[in-house]
Length: 120
Length: 111
Image (cartoon, rainbow over all chains, first blue to last red; front, side, top):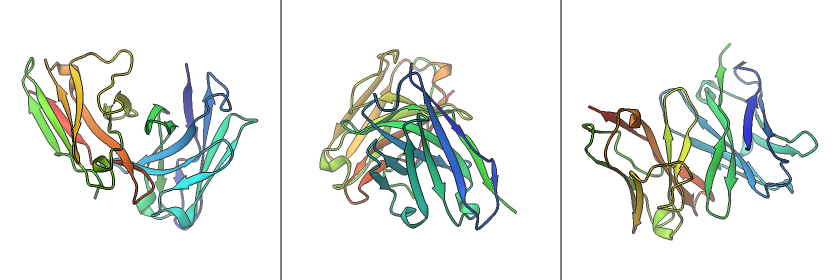
């Protein structure tokens, strides 16, 4: 059974870089033939797609974050990662990673999520 | 403000049914992109409930039914049970954004 797990600092200072990783277990990230994505949810609010990456490294990012966002994949570690630069309090959110089924367009399964707070 | 519009809340008594709407536009639902639904219990990750407009993943009871017409979609839940209390989100793809988009979520309360 495919499982995803987010990891990274829970507290980031304003103007610094938020870095998260998502470790895939239960299968090789190379075997799934899918896109891998990041979604976030500010406290008490709805879901927002951040960006997605395919195994060949091609990325698709939310235009509202594009200039600050880098998503990479490391098949040797069965991981993909997120870096968001110049963070502000508005970036405080629960961050989820998920597999994105690009042929039908849905996310499944999801990681359990990790809360990142931007504060000095 | 979310690209897809959902009512903030719906409620129903045990055993009754409710419908949650999801309204989009010609660049997403109306452009024939599939609609998917997720269920999220507060404090946990969203979980796929309906994919491809009206398909249920293994383990999802047939009390949950998805439909789509024009620029809108709906999630119908029949025979409400207490454990159905959760937040429900619709999701599609938007050609203007060139990426997935979500509704703002609907909180279901079982009275």
